[in-house]
Image 1 (cartoon, rainbow, N blue to C red):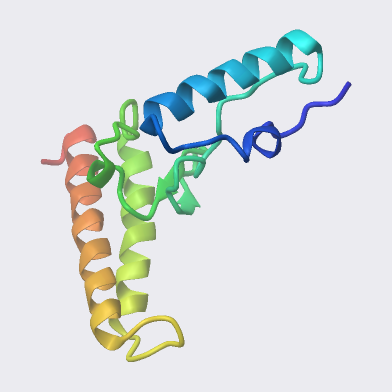
Image 2 (cartoon, rainbow, N blue to C red):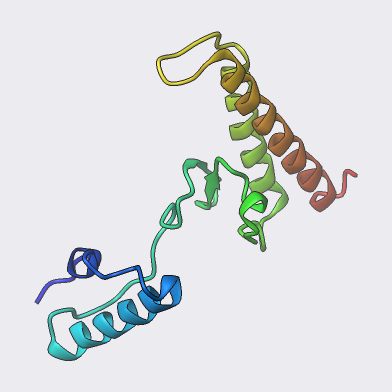
Amino acid sequence: MRIFTVFRQIGDLPTTGGGQALAKARTAQVLSQLLLDGRVRELRKGGEGARGGRVIGHTRSGKPIYAHGGNSLGLRIHRGWSGEDHQDAHAAHYALAVKHGGMARSPDMTPQEHAEVAEHHALVAEHHRKKAAKLMGEG
């Protein structure tokens, strides 16, 4: 028996007539049945980026660095981060701010969109810089 992604099994679940609560309940029911039937040996929680976040890098300790910064989705992904982790996240976001700030146009983004993305990454980079300084006793 092999481990496989169960979303292929549940991809055709109805999401109308009961909204997300019904879809979640049906998903749990289907997953439970797959486990009981022996068609799935193990279920694993989604990994990095599984909730729609785009990973732009990793800290030296291996933690994923998300493009959105975490707080925009109400996530607490920075809990337990060290000052060094925040320094790494600062560097990743700062590099993207510089990259997008220098781009006039690309096939998928207008100059205005590049400017907005650059501003976002600059703000998140500054947040991580401040957190690193605080955790490392510099601020």
